[in-house]
Length: 328
Image 1 (cartoon, rainbow, N blue to C red):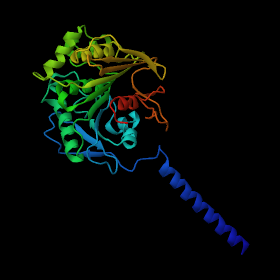
Image 2 (image 1 turned 120 degrees about the horizontal axis):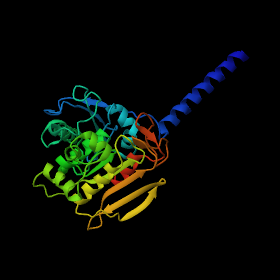
Image 3 (image 1 turned 135 degrees about the horizontal axis):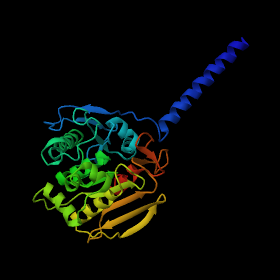
Image 4 (image 1 turned 120 degrees about the vertical axis):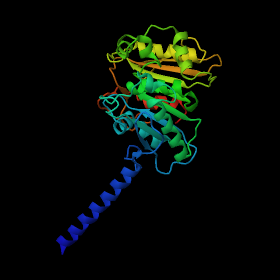
């Protein structure tokens, strides 16, 4: 009889501990999300033959922002969405995420074709496919069309600049990580020269390339937040300098930083337009190689999980972008 009572107490204790663990897991800020990544088909004519994935937090109300997150070479939508921290922040702050995915039939390394004329022009190729994804997402979620932001890593960063230039009316802001200015491959004569050496252009010439992508457009233009590792030997740091020149010029700002400080120990600059609005921000991540900066953990400024080309440097780029964009 005593053994029976003891066994019953052990069962009851085990059940109680299980319930406590489940409650703790539910309340934990780092808990797994109930929503999941979903593929969307039939989102438009899709001239770039891309795949569309999206993440919509459970119970997301209408009128919320949308973030478009473009993966880097050899990556995919799911891995980048999770690794970068964007899905984690979507749950924390309440917005939806569109995750375009390249197909190997388009590019053997799964890179977005930021350097191909047919994929970077308005109304054509991959750029048009991403624009169609935005329209579909806004329609399906009743999202806020004035708060759509686009970001990406490496080739995804190059395609982010494409979307900002070719479809500026669709995006309030862009976030480019280890990426390249719009029209860089054409200016340098080769994507490889662009990546490894940059292109010799004045700020006005860089700005003219953006304006030529959307003839007659008078603004407003998307603002830019850019991240670049100083030890990146795949996309050289000169490309962030050229991005700064390109987008300050488009906004009518000069190339002298109005703010120069450090964030998490890394150099950070802010460039403001004549009205005092921050139009370009840059983060030079000292010693970081080629990848997306993250800071895994459950702290208020932490996000992301380290992996290939997703680098733990105690600074989460997605968090910094989201704060700059007013998402959280």
